Length: 413
Image (cartoon, rainbow, N blue to C red; front, top):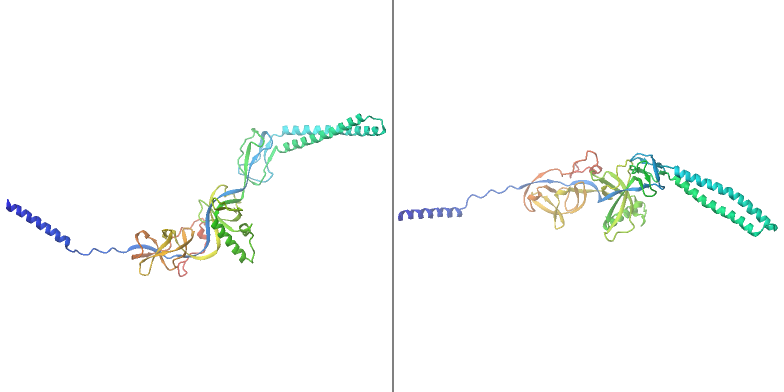
């Protein structure tokens, strides 16, 4: 029994010794991890125009709700929905017969009174002559004169009634007050139209079309400074305080929410006379040609306001940029395949590419893929690739199509 217990403790001691010896012994060194693979691209060199982007809404130049000026039965409709109409074009006809009768009655009453006035004037003149000769009483003269004057007043009253009847008769023909595109008829023939109450249709003048947006104080001052600078360069022509933007015909670009780039070209047309102190913004309006009525009033749009002339710039994909406590930066691979941290100053966004104003050069290798797997100071395995750009729009609406071709360092497209 004692022998078995001793043997058991001996085996346990041997096992413990082996485990301790194994823990303290040095095995073969672990294999080093290979450098992380990252995709690098050189910045694109491209001509760009500095700009400011906004959002806005379209609005018609003029919009009118058509209402009748007289009460009556709607007789006829003389247009098709969404038809382009001209000013003074006939749109609706209200049954004119009651108004024609009122006009004819007023006209007949006027003729009757004018006939009576001829007799009253003759009698008044005759009695006046007799009164001068002493052959007529003064009361008779006053009566004849009063009759004449009363008829003159009645004629003036009936003449006004005749003009009112003429207006009512004319207003039975409802015409277009402006040029534009008309909506559907809101009332069908046979219904009673109440004067100045019943809406009949709407006319929208949307060629050209306005676009309204709000610009910050900083943007307003920047644009004003740029306009004054270009005005001074153009033969010393000064810009007035009232017409700085409008007088300069400053270009403006626009796109709908389903469009790429900024295919619609217009210009600034109006700026509010003062900045809204509660919001710190100024209302600005642009105007765009719209001959085919493609741009509807009330649409949400993207706007781009160019600043200055085109200039050469470095661009990188927006996804390569990082942010560190408000500081934008790029990770660059140097000639020893080590990651460098580069603080940069960024400019405008150009179709997914961000303008880099300072911090890198055209020959730097910018990490565009795999940024999450590396940090500054580590060695990486760079894999060169072209700078990622947005695919071209087959319809030609992509804003890149209007820029000079991008080039890699060395002048190759």
